[in-house]
Image 1 (tube, one colour):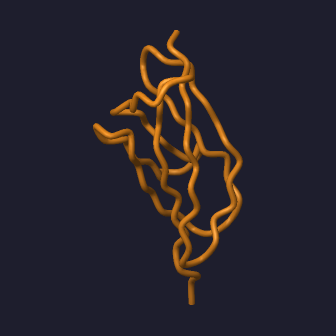
Image 2: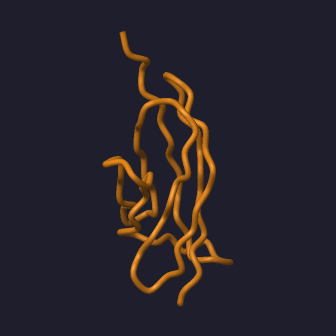
Length: 85
């Protein structure tokens, strides 16, 4: 029997502002788990509940990463601020 998925959601903003960034790829390297932020900067993804490095990337911005630990049947929040290149 497998463990239920864990979820991570949040918003992506332009650094130092509250301006949302859409079309940011949020992903876990070396997996096929990914999502894209919508026009309000919001994203949600799910994966097997363990610890990961979560990446956020979009052309024209410097990438960002965060260490997260997903918990079964729970949603954690991880926001990102991306700096323009």
